[in-house]
Amino acid sequence: MTCPISSSQRAYFLLYYLYLPVPATKDKIVQDFQSSVLKEEWSKRQSAILTRANERKAQNKQHQAELEEKLNAWKEHDTAAQKQLDEQMNALKGQFVDKHLDVMSDVGRLERKMGTGPKFGEGKACLNTRVNLIQCYKENDDIRPCNDIMAALEQCVSKTVTSH
Image (cartoon, rainbow, N blue to C red):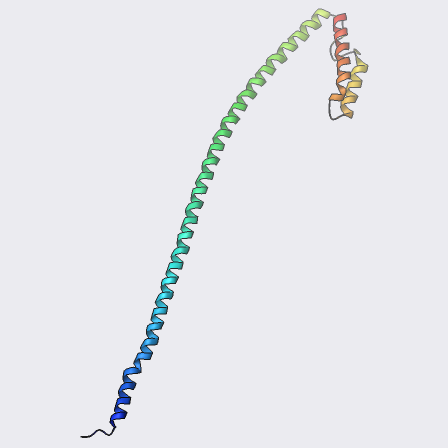
């Protein structure tokens, strides 16, 4: 039995069938290699992105914890300072009430002792000076320009009290 194909044709077909898949396989190998390289690079990139994101999250949590700690410390300090201020305010209110009662008692004693003399806030004792002082206070936001008038009023009151 002879083959209808010549030996040169047979060699050609053999080479064709043997080498035809090689370029296709070569392309496939190259594509697979490129694909695996891309996948590996993409995997590295994703891993780097996730690592940076996790680092940022950790830094944010740490920063938030630090801020909360500072806020709590500030709140404690504020509470302590407010408590101290409240205590000082209550002490000063108590002192004010005590001084007010002392002054009212002294005023009452002076009024009884002076008898018919002018009472504080009543009559025309130092009227002009009081009017001038009130006018000065109305015209000025700052009380320093009224210091001279205030000194004159103190002098007038001292004279009025000591003369009776």
